[in-house]
Image 1 (spheres, rainbow, N blue to C red):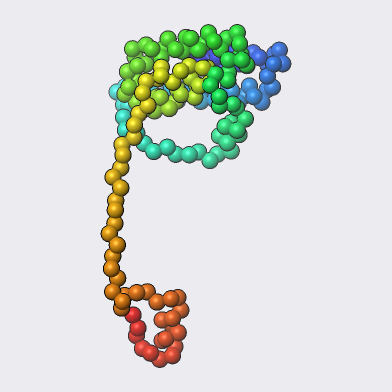
Image 2: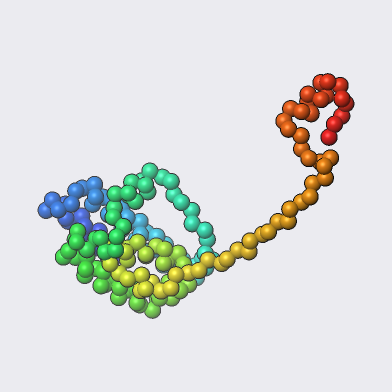
Length: 174
């Protein structure tokens, strides 16, 4: 409900001409994506199907993602001056929800919840400490390979030498 009302407050800024329609659509789209991902995580958490492992990030190379990332600001609390009457109120309400027991349990059980909520907290100027500690990915052991000693008769020949030798009649060379 908080995210939906935040989206409406951003959309209402078009009436006064304070923000351009394109920027409002980008902000609205980002808030709606965060809302959808968060609702999916909450549904899986309530059903007991939370993915606990930390998976490597996959970079999205779609055009919409690139435009959204390049147009919208990334600094801490950038949405507060754009929607001054409403954003601070929604930020405090969201901070209260993040300190709720069920949300705390979700944040502890699922590293994905922190990744979903971190951009929203940055937009609204909520400190990242509210989300709890960052999950640490398991460190993989580095495999060290020993250098193989290659016998002289196994050293590969330069390209074309073997076929040239066969054409000259030297028989089978290795």
